[in-house]
Image (cartoon, rainbow, N blue to C red):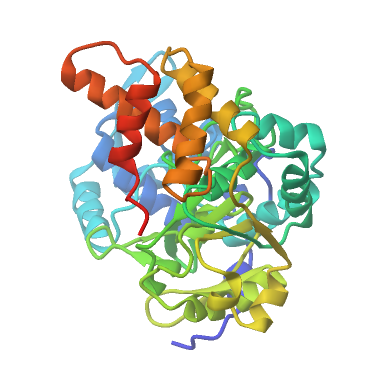
Length: 429
């Protein structure tokens, strides 16, 4: 099979429509009728006897389109009418249909929601690009309200969001890089996008919608559109040290015989966080070489079994978070492509105090101001450590764990905090 991308073969005859359009006929679904019939038959086999309305619900098609599929399957003696619910036929798979369904399931076990065409997916992702959303200071302040940053850092983060380009967050451990990356996605919380259950490409199925990633939008999903799309918040996908180069391509399941979209495909129209960058199981240069074209041109090529390549959008904000200096993990060419580099470092005494008070409040505890001032001096002077945003949370946890062990209520007094310091910090070398 020729591995080159053949756009005409991919989208030829496809009906390109967004989720606001509700297909009334199977011709308007934009996927080959034979594929629709196969998925409907497998769904009928797995779901059991059901009405046409139930088949419509399971496949996420309109009632009219589901009825057309039923008519085609019935004409081929693959299903039959077993009764009526009011004026709606109740259908069941026939013995001939059962044999055919088992044969289909041996080749591909995908059933349920019908896929959308690749052309429709590409058009919708481009339409929902992060670059089309303008971020203002109020949006950033709302999303970062649970964190303590000065106005200059918030301004840098907001500018990075408006760029639509990759961002590199760096600094020592515990300064809030991962929390900041996740908060960047929350800036767009009120901006919903449409995610398809699955995409069909040259007869192959790629699942995209993942309920663990794609949370439902705050507003109700319109019921007059194409139900093969789910209205979601802009997604946030985080990958860390477990990332391998194989994970960046389509994930073919040899048991189900269909594909699961890679992390960057599920992150389209949202934020992809590469946490602990430089500590992955692949060298940083290999990862960046893979993404040099996507970061520049907003497109990526994925490979199907057999070597055929397909082109999909690379429409997301990529946030690299690392404890390492960018110059030690990126060469000059990649430093240029990642145009925004933001350093997150130690917090001031005032910021440390504010974070400490918020953590204490979350635990239902009061704060002894003298004990807090003494804590800051001990961390800086005795332990020779700079103040980091993670310290209040970690030290309050130490106090609470100790109190639980001793069977008493926790108290953030100086004695308890000093014990926590001794347990948490290594003595200065």
